[in-house]
Structure formats: structure tokens, C-alpha cells
Image (cartoon, rainbow, N blue to C red; front, side):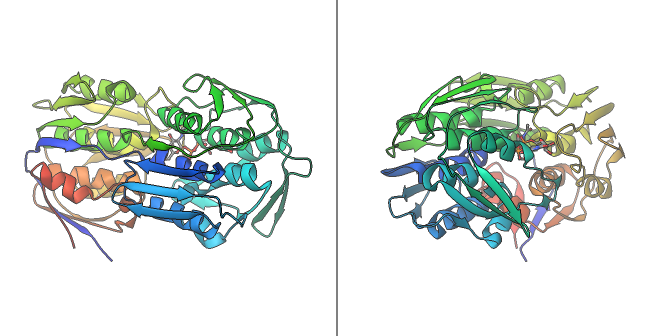
Length: 417
Ligand code: UD1
């Protein structure tokens, strides 16, 4: 079992190249199986979730090779439509393969994703939408048998909630379906735009991505293409938080500042200074970050649920009292106990957390509870006095490409043991 050992209190300084986005790489890898030609995906982060997606592609009969940060996928030899239960469990977001496999094979068998560390993971919106497109679904002992007796066809779909996963699944099923699909109240996340841009590069006809109405005209065939995965917004926010807790000053390279506004706005409210430049931004932390009266997680363009724990780690040492409200997932405060163990003053009541800033935090032995909760513990450890050890870091490796290398490059003292 690996762990991170952090000696806190070092001021972070320097430049960081932000990794490619996990939440974009995974749906694009799923999309690559829809293509007859080869796809070459650059800027793909090296993460355990990406490896799991490659194993799913290989299991379906695609040829998938990862060299450096480039993945090549050749889906011509795809012969299977079954995603084994074990691979479904390895990657929480493997449900995004459903729309793609249906689009390519007209059927799909996969394990029901069940719950995860953030609470229950319903997929009712995904399944209802696919049923409207002609998919017949049978559930038997935790296995979903999906077929398309009369083929996949376009449909008008209104999502009751702008679910990122459901929007991706509809998009993936619709690009090769017969006719037009219109999705209203679609998710507007930049990662949806990235998926649509890749698919357009392969010949798909999609408009409206980035707005809440998506239109997809089905085409007969998709070629592959060469595509560069967008920068990871949450990794960028994590490095900003790490600079903020250590009184640091960093330059983030390869980010799109416009995608980060809901998070940079929060850091500015804490009195950090941010100057965007082309494909990057400078971040100067505040001398003493100020508390934020209230932050509520919301679908894009609101403040992302994925940044909640990370920003909370900064607010622990901010001057004053902050309120954090989690509206997306019901079980996303599991990192709080670890932060409290490190000296934070946080009270949780249902979906709200009240964070009273303390003057200093101290190192402790903690365990990552989930991906972003684990990242929050690293951030807190960097700003705490003394030694912090973070165990269960497999959670963190799902989403961060060698975080210890990035942080050491900025002057942090962190080792993987
Ligand atoms: C969510 C986040 C995404 C984040 C990802 C990983 C939102 C809107 N989505 O995406 O930004 O990167 O987690 O942490 O912030 N739901 C249903 N039925 C469904 C699907 C979802 O009720 O069929 C509910 C969930 O219970 C939850 C919310 O919708 O309350 C989450 O939405 P969704 O966007 O689907 O989740 P992810 O795609 O995992």
C-alpha cells in the first residue's frame, strides 16, 4: 500500500503544466470505439481510471496503446458488447461506455454500477433517455441487458437534471442513430464541448454543445481523428489551492482561464490575485485568505462539486467563517474528519458544512476517502505544520497524474512511499 508523506509549511513557487482532463479523457476514450478509423488522443493523463478505460476497450476487441501521454485506439476489430462486472467496478464512470457500445453494436451487457464512495449512483436518467431512443433494457441480478430490436433512433429528450453522465451517454448513442436527437436541459460542462469537438472531428454532426440544448443528426459512419484532450479544470484548482494554503505564487500553463471562472472567482473573494494570460494564469495567494460567506456546488457554470473538498482545505485556515453547501452528491463531506484531525474547526449538518478558520493546522496520519477528498488532505498537509501522511492514495491516483512530481516541482516536500 502506497502513501504520501508531506512536510508542510513550504511556500509553493514556480510553473506547472496542467494535465489533460480526466473527465474529458474517459468519455472520449469511450467515444473512440464508435469509429471505423484510428483515433490518436494526445494530452491524455496517466491515471488508473484511464488504464481501466483502456482495459475495457481491449476487452471489447479494440486495439488500444498508451505511449507517454498519447493513446491510440483502433476499434475495427471490436467483437464484444459485454463489459465485465469487475471492470465496471474498477472505474466508477464506466457507465459512459453504455451509449457508445450501443451505438456501435446495437446491444450491450454491463454490470449495474451500484453505489460509490460519494453515495448512491442512480442511472435512471441515462436509462430513460436511451429507452426513448429505442433501447430495450432488462435487469437481471445486477446485470443490465440492453438491446435495440428496431435499431437506435433519434428522440427529443428533456433531462430533469443536467446530468453530465446522462448527457454524454445520449450524445454517444445519438451520433450513429437514425435521425435527429434533441436534448434539452443538457449539461453544459466544458468536457461536454470537448467530447462533441472530438466527435465532430470524426465526422459527427452536433450543434449546441456548451448550451442547454444539444442537437445531434445521426450519421452513417465515423472516422477516427487526432485530438488533444482539454486541460483538467479540477487539477488546476487543486494547484491553486496548494499555492493558497502555503502563501505561494504559481503560474499555471495550459489552462483555459474562461473554464475556471467559478473557481477563480472564489479564490479572488479570498483575496488571492489572479491574472489570466494566453492559455494560462498567474496565481498570487492572499497574505491571509478571507473566509467566504457561502459557496454552493452547482452544475456548470456554477461552482463544481469536484472542487468542494479542495477549496474547503483552504477555507480551514481563512480568516472568518465560511459556509459550504453540497447540492450534487449526498455523501461528499467524508474528508471533513481528516481535516478536523489536522486541527480544522468544521461542523457538518446534512448537506452544509460550517468552516471556522483557525490560525494554523498541524500534520496528522489520515486516509483518503475518495479522489477529491484525498486531494484536499494533500492540500491541507502542505499548509500544516509538521508531517502529514495520507494513506489509501489509490483514490488520488484515479484522477491526478503524478501529483508528487508536480508539487515537488513547485518546492513542496512530498514523497510517495
Ligand atoms: C458528476 C458531476 C461532475 C463531476 C463528476 C465526478 C455535476 C452536475 N456533475 O458527474 O461535474 O465531474 O460527478 O465527480 O456536478 N443523477 C440521478 N440520476 C441519474 C444521473 C444522475 O439522479 O441517472 C443525480 C445524482 O444522484 C447526483 C447528480 O444527478 O445527485 C449527479 O449528476 P451527474 O452529472 O449525472 O453525475 P456525474 O456524471 O457523475
